[in-house]
Length: 495
Ligand SMILES: Cc1cc2nc3c(=O)[nH]c(=O)nc-3n(C[C@H](O)[C@H](O)[C@H](O)COP(=O)(O)OP(=O)(O)OC[C@H]3O[C@@H](n4cnc5c(N)ncnc54)[C@H](O)[C@@H]3O)c2cc1C
Image (cartoon, rainbow, N blue to C red; front, side, top):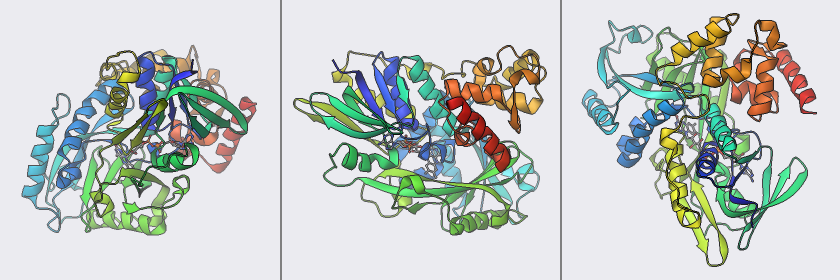
């Protein structure tokens, strides 16, 4: 008998989502991730759980409808990590007409099957606070709903739920080779330590690496390459305006750029969109991209944003299933699942494309495609909260208050950050601490040893970078010396 029913290569949102769904159906699941969970594209997105207003221009109605419906499903499953967000879309006389935008938003609202999120309204920018930071050539805007998520933590809670349903999650473990017979035999390399396991079915969910894994690990390259890689960069600057809404800005090249309130004191701005070749692991924002994003902001805002204001920048690589279209922004954002079944040989399912927003549906579809290999099982993830998310979708404020009542020594900001990150699992981080000193060493900002230990024991964190940039965004508030101190603490604990 094989060691596992299902092995998944790739610990991004798609691999973690599939592992969770499969483990919850009683399958014996292995997930391998060569670095940290969400170390690929899944921590470098715009972090929107959205239908994608601009995909309507490309007639991707099915994708938009599926994605819009997922907003409220995911909001209910992870109300700590996902919050509704209103987007202000200023009418720009040099951009799309007000009528076209109004029609697009009517369609967006109509396709969205909303129960929780409010619909579109019109804003008079001369009176609404959303107009204050904008140049006075903008008089009118529309405001509509989508959601904002902590993308990297969403991956982690999916992996946690998979593990709590019995899955084996191995991070810093590369699938170096996969040999196919009636079962898959995987050679795993965990930082020099080699191991072999067998699985009945293999899923290649390696995102931007999917074709290089097919070629070099599975040695089964597709007949023709399907993948188009497309790079997108973001910048983070100090908070630019007071209110809590985001902007969606039409750039002169007809792309859209978002400006989103981020981590209380910052604004996240992105993204760019350009074809990419090379190693997805080495992708980084260029000076030109940073100048471009600042330029779009300066077309709209009264104050100037310059590259000198950038406190953090990151880039990621979208993997898009190439349907032969020309420009990157014209390639479909829908995912494609390719099942390779051969008589007498174990099956292989390859995942192309996909969005954070649609990962749960992708996982359901993946398991449907494999249904004939496993005992009958039902779809289940739409009704079940993710770890820490077992409270009402609008109950975050109440949960923060509960956190403050139980651990009154926490400041408001600390309680809010911990509750947003861990939801009802905040209990497992703070345990029975009765004063801040019970949480141990303080490394910088409000990060304590108790939280770091929790992240190492329960969330597979191994390095300071895992903690500061993926389990949290405290990297924005840490000095190099504080980071080194955290690294030393974690290295000692890893030994
Ligand atoms: C700039 C940008 C903005 C975006 N914005 C949004 C947005 O706002 N909303 C939205 O819904 N989507 C957005 N997306 C899309 C979304 O981020 C991606 O579709 C999604 O993160 C892809 O997840 P994945 O699991 O397929 O890939 P990844 O997250 O890249 O995961 C693949 C993993 O496989 C691992 N791996 C590779 N080879 C091996 C091996 N041999 N062994 C073990 N592990 C291996 C890698 O290390 C990697 O972690 C955006 C994407 C980009 C680039």
